[in-house]
Length: 183
Image 1 (cartoon, rainbow, N blue to C red):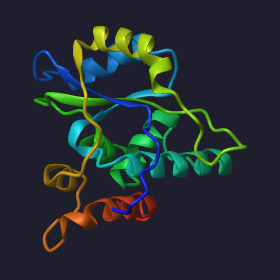
Image 2 (tube, rainbow, N blue to C red):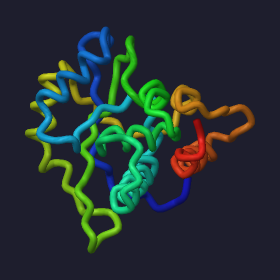
Image 3 (tube, rainbow, N blue to C red):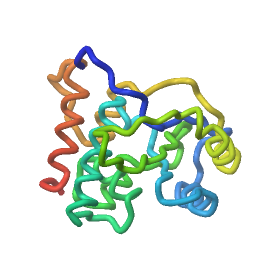
Image 4 (cartoon, one colour):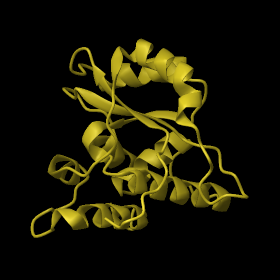
């Protein structure tokens, strides 16, 4: 990982009161109570860094501008890019919330701002929305930021054998870049 850190991406780690029994039901609750498609859930281990989130967001913005999204919505497209795959089913398996998960990332996709590469965001301004969604999802805030884990690398479908820990983030960034080349 390089020296300079990007700003925090609007993502909050939540721990559920109980392990997820039905991921589809959890998704339905979010869909019912979120304000728009800018809000989504990602499986906890599949997010490896702030750079990983920002790289997926930048790729999403480019695909929206070019009219080249695979998914019907920006939330699904972002999940697909994080997962590094062209297939939506595989994307949900890799980067979505799974049965038995105890944690997930609640993510708010920023609006693209043509005057800035990465928009200035104050995640504290979103506290009320986040708290409301956490309540509906029966989750509690965990004060952590994303870090690469072996579980996350494996869940994303990356063979971690022979890779040094310092390479994991770079490999995940490359995973986004080849999302449309892989199955």
